[in-house]
Length: 196
Image (tube, rainbow, N blue to C red):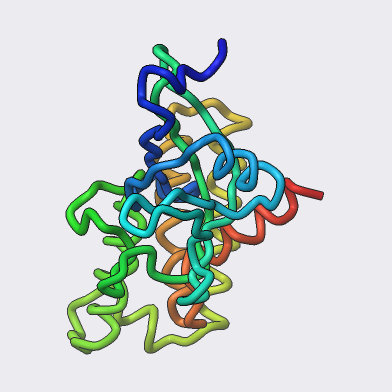
C-alpha cells in the first residue's frame, strides 16, 4: 500500500510511541521529505508547520527519537513510529506530551515502587523489609531456591508453575532493587542482545 499524501495535503500526522513501554509520546507531522530523512538517518524528523521547515527531534534539546519501526494505517494517511528516546520527549520536560497516556504493563514498575517503600518504612512485620535486612547473600539464596521450585514445578507438572514463577520474579525484583537495578535495565540488556 502506498501512502496517500494527497489526502492529507502533503502533511501526514505521525504518532510517536515508546518502543519499550508502548506509551504514546507525541504527535507530529511529516511531509515526504521528512519521512525520507527519518528513514535514512534513523532519527525522527518532522515538518514544522509554524516554521515551515524540517526539524529533527532533539537537534536543540539533545533528546532525539531513534526509530525502531514505521507503520502506516489502513488508509495510508497516518503514520505510527515506535522509537527510543534519549530523554524527555515533551518540551515541558516530561516523558510524554500526553502525561496520562498508559504504558504497557506498568505493574512491574508499581511493584518496584512497593518494594522500595518497604525498604524505607523498615517495618519488622514486612517480609520484604526482612529480606532487605538479611542482605544480598540471603536474597541470592532465595532467588536460587525459587528458581529451583519453578524448575521442579515445570518437570512434575504440578499445576503451580505460574505461582512459583511469580515467587521467583518477586524475589528477583527484591534483589535487583537492593542492588539499585531496575527491571527496565534488565530489559535493555535483553533488547541489546536481540539486535546482535
